[in-house]
Length: 277
Ligand code: CAA
Image (cartoon, rainbow, N blue to C red; front, side, top):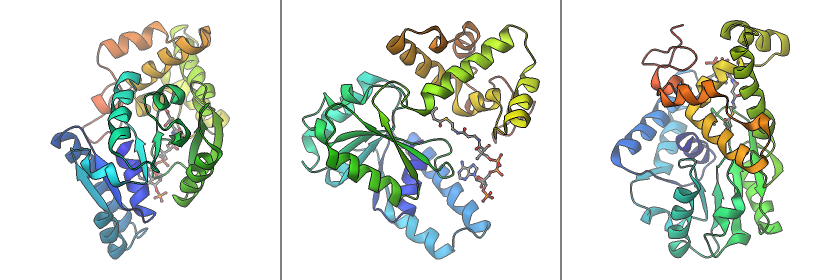
């Protein structure tokens, strides 16, 4: 999601520094942004001059040094509390005292990450949705120590990106995943229990409820590894059966069937991510 977040920030006029773990990951992010910008220019949604200005506002690096002068930092790394805390602890020492830290986590507690820094008042959740350039929603998450001023500034920032912010409490899954994850897991359980085929369940929810994607299309799109990780975190927080990952999901993740990104999940995909069957 990092590349999508960087793209919308640069599009909104912000000087944007992107930090990735290594050159390979940086190349991947750069390519995704480039593809998205060229497609927008081809379709006449963006002028070539605006595209060039956006490219100039983006800087890529595998070092943290570039972001030490940023006013706002948005973390979108792997969904691991220890990895996130490690990054924030390091940034806290070198970033400006006024800088606000945000996490794009979908299920971890913002308070736990804030506790790894000396700025819990300037720490909030800023949760985007996939695909970031298209989805209008952003959840602004107030943790136990987040100040009013930080909530107001992060909310204004989200609006300046052209997004519609909603306020959410720092409970695992916030608003959207609290409702979406049990629905996706229940679709897997329904399929396991023989309620319907993958295609029929997907068609049911698309044509019966006007969802843009059926639950299995969405699971493959978000990534089964990601949904599994989120479900485990939510189950650990709430200890309610509806958040427990079903056995089939766990086995698919063990088998490396993560969805679109690995070419196979509930459905199969070609190299371009288009559905084979
Ligand atoms: N980047 C930029 N633009 C994109 C894009 C991307 N990755 N993917 C699609 N678009 C644009 C297309 O260019 C197109 O724009 P125009 O209409 O202006 O031409 C528009 O979006 C529609 O795309 P398509 O015609 O290719 O395909 P579609 O109509 O089937 O829409 C979709 C694709 C927007 C992904 C739609 O299927 C959808 O809304 N799906 C549901 C997505 C969803 O539920 N997201 C939330 C996931 S949960 C999450 O993210 C949170 C979490 O923590 C797990």
